[in-house]
Image (cartoon, rainbow, N blue to C red):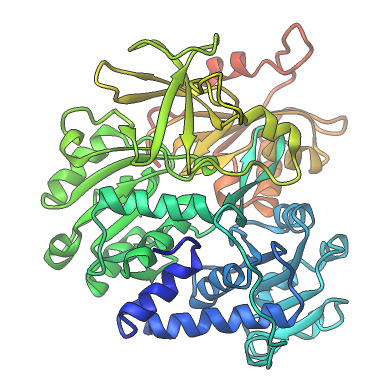
Length: 534
């Protein structure tokens, strides 16, 4: 059995070379063709002198070259960094130098947006564009600029892929942190292989499955759509949808059997008319990125009566953690479920002991899926990756578990229920958003003196972002200030980070330590979005 993630493709190419592996619009790639494309990228990277574990950034939407590049980097022995295509230059400018990306694979339009930030990326020596021709504006960049055809068509150096074992890192996924800039979660081959095997075991995946990938590949759950499919020889349909109805059409067109989405999308899909072919083909659906409203789950059960529903929970630091089996969805739809295979989930109180049933505590994940920590951030790593609380004292080597920051309770049967975040992270539309990231953009507008971003309950989004600001010296508390700051946020932030509303006030409350009292603000505005579903 494969121990490294790119070996999933090689194994399936040997077992069933003509089986469909990847579909995109009217294109189709068999496993044999996919393997050749992965090898071409690996050879090209080695020809550029890529080192073992060197970072390869991939800043593209879901398209075949994205998949070729991710798994090609792994096959070369490098480390891939999928960058969410929704991010704007401000966020990408942090990621590229933070993890020392040496090769960036992207598109010409995206590269043009980065012209002002690439000077701060000293390790970046080569940029590969998926287009055949580079625009005039980017040709003067100091980095080597190659078209994708030139990149993959070069003879290469003949160098062998770097030898890697399962504990070696293969990916860095960036996720928002509570202190501002995104954190890079370092994943090993072991993490991703164990995750794929665990998920396929309870989803019952096989080569007969066809999975529609609508989640971003920069997400752990989105990337998992690829690894789980390739691990069993199933096929993946790549899709960046514009409207929810497009998803239903794709399920029908491609005969999709498996679909994962975040609650926001499920809230929209439940109200659509699903044609009979889609209802018949869809074997299972999964939810991730936040709690699924019970009303949404029940509506989907009626719309898709023969489809298995798996409610799932995970964090990037441990890929997947829990799932609720379909036979329990009607019994306890509010539950996060229990631990996935090959993982142990603990609920730990502030004294470091396991909680009794119905006693709130922090969710702690131990096992093969616990990642390697945060790239270039030892303090945050030490905060979240700590000794396992159930480890026997006599063991000579300390096992590290990941402390999620999520408050949960478990019932007498061991089923878990989410309570709240320990920190101030905002979960909206399946994304984790740092309040500081939003606040920093508000400050950068030059219009505000104080800012506090809050996540407030919202029926469709999970949480909506409210930005409360105080005016700067040359501004006043009025609607024009709110509208101007909101327009600036829209220009600087991806859509999922843009506040749903901005409120200007003369002052913000502060606690005894001089910090903004977010709890007081959240209590004051807690019902602001509760009657809104869009």
